[in-house]
Image 1 (cartoon, rainbow, N blue to C red):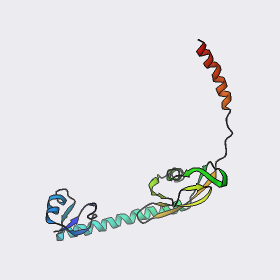
Image 2: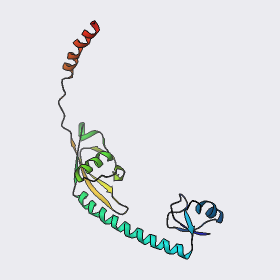
Image 3: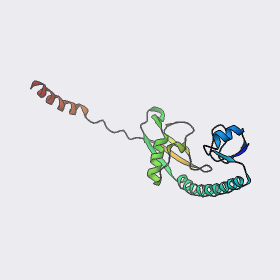
Image 4: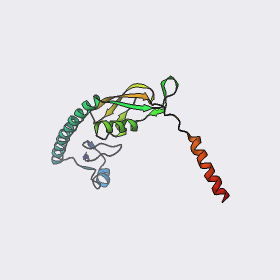
Length: 173
């Protein structure tokens, strides 16, 4: 039986595919769950119109994403991290940190999962990172990792000494 898939069915077909499947599979599983429809001339016309509408929608999304990609391409993300010897940083720069900084710079939220880093950023300097904005649009962003200025250690012993007499008084009472 020839059917048109309305929704994605894992390991079988994706939405819009026309495939020949077993009669029982179509009648007992695909049709009741509205995952597919019988491939008639009317259904084929509906499929064609859906595909044209999807193409128009995707073109609009791509156009918006292209404009945003151009804006992102002009951005330089500057992140600060504690660094050790040989300009190696402690830990690494994550996708989440880059996404947070991009949101601060552009005002638009970017999902951390769309940021693609070739390998973890573990050294100071300039790195190129790609951001997948749409199915067909990817932006390239420059990430600069600078050393964090070391903050002088606060006098913790003084605060501990101030607390000790209070503890001694409490214990004496």
